[in-house]
Image 1 (cartoon, rainbow, N blue to C red):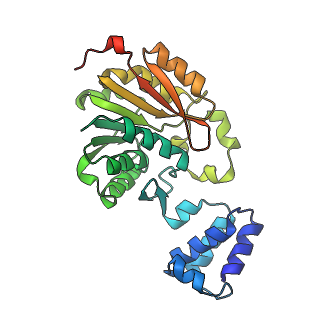
Image 2 (cartoon, one colour):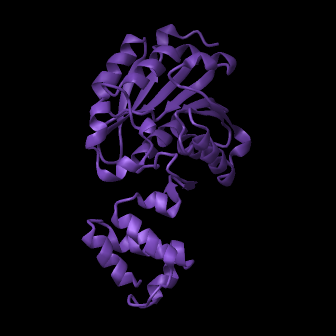
Image 3 (cartoon, helix red, strand yellow):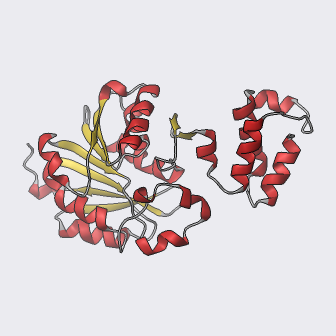
Length: 281
């Protein structure tokens, strides 16, 4: 297939960034870099069965990230598979705030870690910190462990296969300066209405229960006792969940600030204990 043929196929399939994606697919499956591709004719044929298969998958709206097998997030590169949620730019706000607010030599835990991108990129930017990353599924944790090693933070992160909705496992882990999480937060009834590409991502990483708030109720209500009194929670939220999550937080005795993502949508809930309740451990 040629570059022009791939662009046309992707465009006809409704792929918006057909030129950019065509370039990424050719570079990935024909082992050439972007600079070299730019110097070649757009009508040059790339005889690759892998490339043709990739184009067919992408035209069926199979996620580009899964086809490539990796994706960029913050300043790191992550291996992604059907066992992991795809890292998204919106979530980079969560990492940005963690890097900014974590105290020196902080110990934090990342709940529902998925590919590990939140914990790993935070550690990459804060070499003084250590972390524990939790997920329910072993295949997902295997990818997260690999990502930790390839991004150079494997010696500062531990992994635990646990159900975040059953927090008793925390008793053995001690306390933390921060709890990070990008939990599932889509209402169950909305899952079937999501755009086609999201249907390929693991449902367990998307389904937040009947009202999308089950993980926030458990994390905010049951994990607070594992935070140092000077500690905090940073939780990614859906664009329309700021009010509901803030109410859950205040009811649990937290102060709650909402930060917007780079697109101007409510994205991160920042929870701290009121100053007058501090009795640092």
